[in-house]
Image 1 (tube, rainbow, N blue to C red):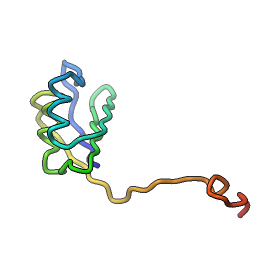
Image 2 (tube, rainbow, N blue to C red):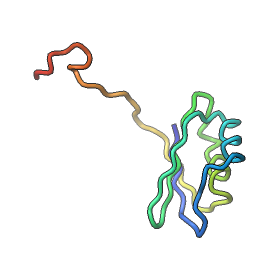
Image 3 (tube, rainbow, N blue to C red):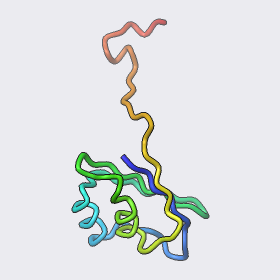
Image 4 (cartoon, one colour):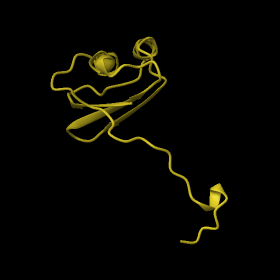
Length: 91
């Protein structure tokens, strides 16, 4: 998983068919796009996706962008309730 942060320009980043094809070729199987008034974030996941391709993935979705920052996970885990896993829910 990689999170790429980049400044928002006049045009909104979008998932179009060409960009999605590029992401698939890079090994991305899940993608999410976030933004506020000044920054956009692209979350990319895929077992065959390499973090070194994050800049290329951002270009596929957002065009040429300067100032792209790439964040890689320190910890990634699934969380569930104890009751849902056979526990009694008491501490």
